[in-house]
Length: 484
Ligand SMILES: *Cc1c(COP(=O)(O)O)cnc(C)c1O
Image: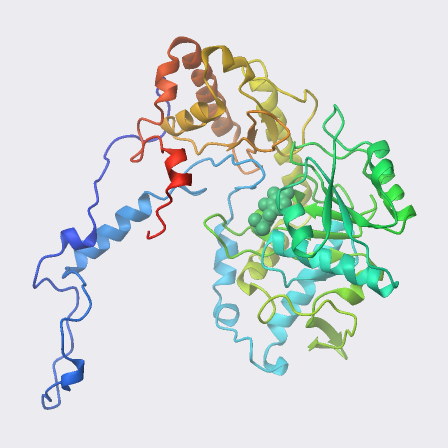
C-alpha cells in the first residue's frame, strides 16, 4: 500500500458505558441541602433505570472519542457524487446561532418577528434571482419534499384548467426521488430513455408526451453529471401540449449564476439548501428544499407566505388556490439563515463557486480517465462518472475499490449510481477542495488501480484499516438488526 498524507494509528477502543461503569462513581455534585430531609414516597422507590455509575472524565472521554470516529467534511475529502458534500464556512453556523434567530419562536406575533420575516422574504428574492424564476416558498424540508410540493403544484395547475392528468415523464438519468415523489402524488411515472450521449433527445420526449401527461421531471445537470443540452426543445414539446416542466435543482452547485432555469423552460424547481447553500448534511437532516416557480404558478405555492404590506412583513394565508401547508410553521428556519448568510457573504462569487466545482470535476475526470473506464467521454459538470470495466479482468469491482479508498483516508464516492451505468463510480470533488487534496485523491485512486493489477486479493478484503472491516451486505439486508 502506498503511504500518503493523512493519519493512521492510535486506534482507541471504546467499550459501552455499561462496561466502563463502576458502582459509586459520580459525575456531578449537588449543592448542600438547606432544607430538612423528607423520606421518599413509597411509590417512587425501586431500582430505577439501569444507568451505569460514571465519573465526569469517563463520560467526556467516551463521547469525545466517539465524536472522532465520525467522518465528515471537516475531517477529510468527501467526494460523494450527487450529494455536494462541500465545506460549509463556519461563519454561516455562527449567524444561525445568533440569539435573535436561534431563539425566535414561531408563535411570536409578526410585530415581534420583523427581522426573521425580512430575512425569509429577502432569501426568497435571492433564490428567485439565482434560479431565474419568479416566486419561492421556503417551506419544504428536503429535496424530495420540494419535489412532492412541485407535483402537488402540477396537479393544482391542471385541476385549475379542469383536467386531471395521470402521467409524468421521467428520464432514466433522474434522481430516484423523482419517480417516488410523482407516485406519492398519485401520478404514474413514464420512463424516458436517454440517448448515447447520456442526455434527453427531443424525439424521445415527443413520442411520449400526450394530453394525459402532466409534464416532465428533469434533473439538470442530470445524474451522469451532464447538462441536458436539449432542455429548451424538450420544454417546448411539453409546453405545446400544456404540460409543465419540473427541474430537479439539487445539482444547482454546477450552474449558479450561469443558467437561468426560467430561461431554459423550467416552470417549477426545487433547490437543496443543505447541498448547495451551506448546511452540513448527511445522517438524516434537517434539510431545506425551497420550491421556485414561474409567475403563473405562484398562486399554488404553500401557505403561509411571507408578504410585504405597507413596509411591514406579514404571514398571509390568503391564497385560496394554494396547495396548502406542507410543514409545521415555515420549514427548517436555521437552514434558511445559513443559506442567507452564505449568499450574502459570497455575492457574485457564487458563480465562481460553480465554475470551480465544474473545473475540479473535469480535472479529476481528465486525470483518471486513462485508469478507469469513462462511459461518457465529454466535458462534465460538477461530477464525473467512471466504471470498473478496466478492472473486471482481475475480478476487482467498484465496491472493492471504493472500500479500499477508506484505507487511504478518503470517504468513498457514490457507487452503483446512477443505475444507467453498470458499476458506476460517481465522483463529486466540489469547489472547496484544493488542487493538492484532489491530487492526493487521484494518487490514491491510481495506486488502487495498480493494486488491482498486482494484488487484487487485498482489494477483496478491504478496508483493512478502519475500525469496521468489510460488511456482510447480504446479511445486513436479509437479517437487519432493528433493535440498534
Ligand atoms: C439529493 C438529491 C435529491 C433528494 O434530496 P433530499 O434532500 O435528500 O430529499 C433529489 N434530486 C437530486 C438530483 C439529488 O441529488
